[in-house]
Length: 139
Image 1 (spheres, rainbow, N blue to C red):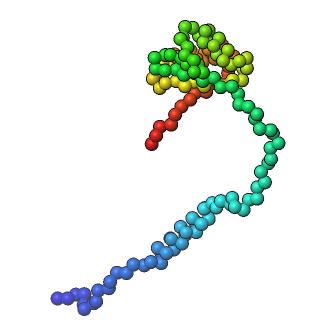
Image 2: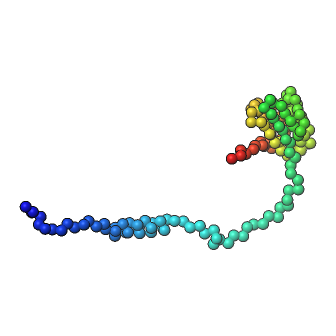
Image 3: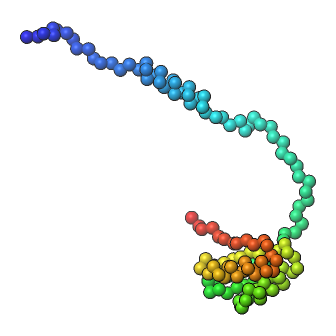
């Protein structure tokens, strides 16, 4: 017995109107919150400098420290005895100027104490500009 009758079954359909409404709201939200760069619109006049070029670079004192604790100061091998002796050699290498730059080229396996000796000697010699040389790794 057929209680439902001869009803044709309706196919369900997807209503796209709410989906389109949600997408339009998201689109409007993204358009309002997006920042645009206006670099091309700015007319910038950069200031000019009248300072003269640096005529000479400060004196550089290159100090090499190898893994065995040996020192090379401006291509001259130095046998370390005391920090004061190293300081005297740095003072002579600076040639009386306190603006000399001490460049420390320490081996990666050199002890920290060897580098500290150089830094302490530079301090005693009155040389305050110290930098460390490094190299970049090849990728």
